[in-house]
Image (cartoon, rainbow, N blue to C red; front, side, top):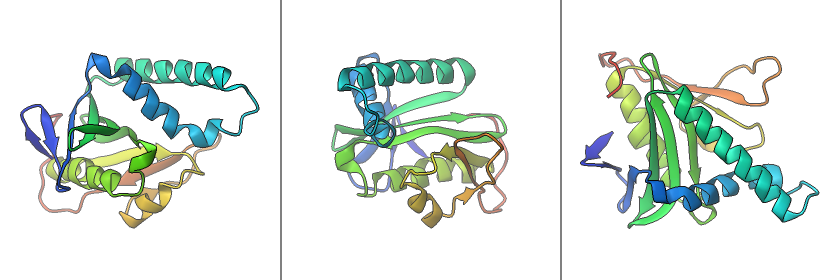
Length: 180
């Protein structure tokens, strides 16, 4: 991961990450809502009720992450200065936890997510020697991308609705270290 001041640089020209700011609330909800469209679009409810449920879920999720993970990092992905997605992860003492990587609908399938995974998560896993872990919904089409990147799906735990994922860095003598 290459940090330049308060930004993370990537190998994709124009794609950078900046820290989330307090004024990003509407953008974060827009990204969250877009990422949950697969789950909520088919619900037989008026859109106002869906939006209410999505807003509550979004607030609850952020609260949980911010209070459960002391090493949480929250980033906005930008392409040529325009927000296109977000990355939320924790550099825990024993692993890297990816809580969320979501792109806005117009940015899906153009390589931004793949670049962020490789340039941020994989690079940090290689640097620290830590395993990167995440989870994904069974019907999420991003599973194909994860498979192409060599991310392993773990056997599901009884009662879990999510699929556990992990990526182990190659053994290259990288040292194990605490959060950076």
